[in-house]
Amino acid sequence: MSTVRAEIELTTEDWDQLAALLDHLARSGIEGVGWLLGEGVRRFIADHDAWEHLVAAGRTEDDPAARELQRREAEAHLVLMRVRAADLEARMDTLRATVADLNPQYQKLKSRLFTLQHERRELTAAPDLEAMASGSDAGGSLGTRVWRWLVGRRG
Amino acid sequence: MELDAALWEQVQQIAQAQKWPRDDAILILLGYGAAVHAPTSAGDPVDALGAARAEVARLRHRVFSATEAVRDLQMNITGLTASIQQAQKSLVTLEQIVADLKRQAARDLTKG
Image (cartoon, rainbow over all chains, first blue to last red; front, side, top):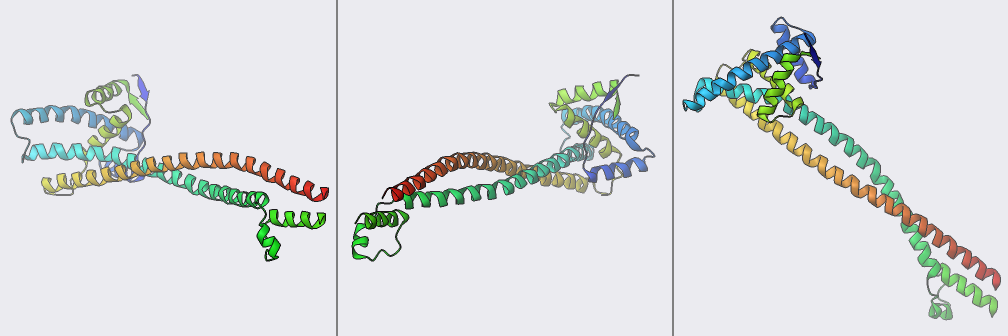
């Protein structure tokens, strides 16, 4: 008998429920999961035909058999949706951590840029001649101070 | 896990017919088997169907919210990464400019 290797990913919640169910059905382990998958295939095909008969008979509303088939289908999708939700939420957490890591990096760069821009403005600022003449520019920008110093030396 | 090739073939056929991705089909069909064999806790089939549908709706909302959040975070990361790269380039340029200006100022001072 040839076999195929398949990987499945389940939430812990579903693994626990499956293990309990398999235990209840006197099955266990991976073989039990394979058996349950076989049961799922067999019953899905049979139920699909049953549903077609119900549709043909116009009995899909308020019919206990139809409700049971709809319940099985809804519950079957829950396993997949739980895995999908868990995967997406794990991805979301990873991305949030990346953003939390990038944000301070960017803030640090912005702060350094701001400091340098301020320094450049100071170094290239035109001297405040009026303030210098009145002597009220005690401190002044670096440019002013450099200018005053140069003028003072030349004078 | 190891699957019988004939069973695998059936899984693939169902997946194709239902337009499910193959990996999804395995989980749905496994879930179908569980749904068939699980002991029914709720006596009323209407309640059982209602509970299953409510859980589907709740999970759909979780998936939707997480998908949106992942998309927003990815855009945020793209923007932040680009901003960081741009800031790093600007920083190199600006550091050079400021260093040149300081050298120039120092030269002017010593010239006098």
